[in-house]
Image (cartoon, rainbow, N blue to C red; front, top):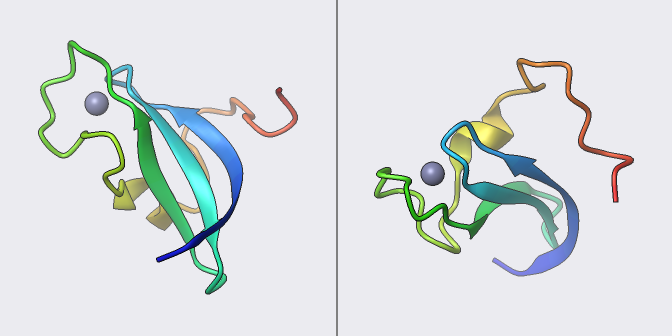
Length: 69
Ligand SMILES: [Zn+2]
């Protein structure tokens, strides 16, 4: 998997930060960018894919991450 560009980033409920990336295949993937030291989810290691972020069509809250710098 090769990353074409970053689209946005997302603050997870546990405090970790995930980045949403587009790959050269046109696929959109989420990778954990910054692990929160207090997070106890073993899946949340830096660089891990976070599939639930890309399978959900829209965030549950109405926070809009795009447009922010
Ligand atoms: Zn986490």
